[in-house]
Length: 258
Image (cartoon, rainbow, N blue to C red; front, top):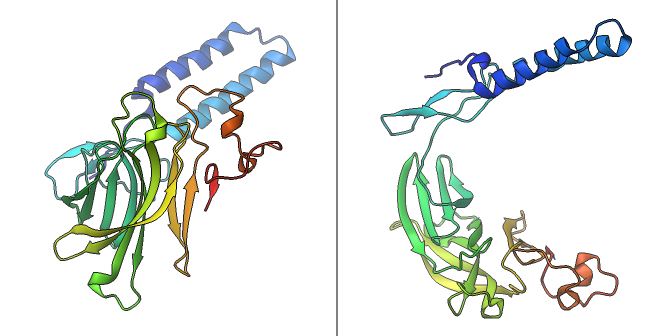
């Protein structure tokens, strides 16, 4: 079910429309610049109208007896369908197959499986640090070529602290890549294996975390520059050559792709 909403009823559009018309009325049409502004305003109104027309939808929720207002769309050939909702700060998804994917929650450290709109989980809970941009951040899935169910592996990137990081002390924290075996029969992640240990200093922002596998099954890891929440310049001890500092220290895992 979809519902078209007139763009003029959108309060934001009404404000912009009135503002544009007001700017035209205030100008005197006896000079060239005023005529130019008038036509520019007409073009702006046309563009605003074309972007707004049909940009709001009412969509049906998959496997749920409800309708909600969906995200904005400008292409009438596209459709929006709600698959699942009410997650706590989701950061990444990775598909296992059609209508089948895993979803990460940054702050809780929980991972869920969504299969045809049905949510299962959490498959595992990881006690991650959640301060600022730390947390459960990245996922990649490696499936065996012979499609054996016990040969699906899940790679995760997350921040762990050996102590409570409510107080600022990044020396007790690190970013890690772990590989888990995905047990498809009972929807659990087991047999964790440490793949990579990375710095978390100074932190806690810009941790990176994107994971990607190529066709040769090589795993790529994106690591941020690990800046503090409040950016501090001239941190020479943390400025590496991989961050384009000519006199920086040797690359140590920060700010790059591995």
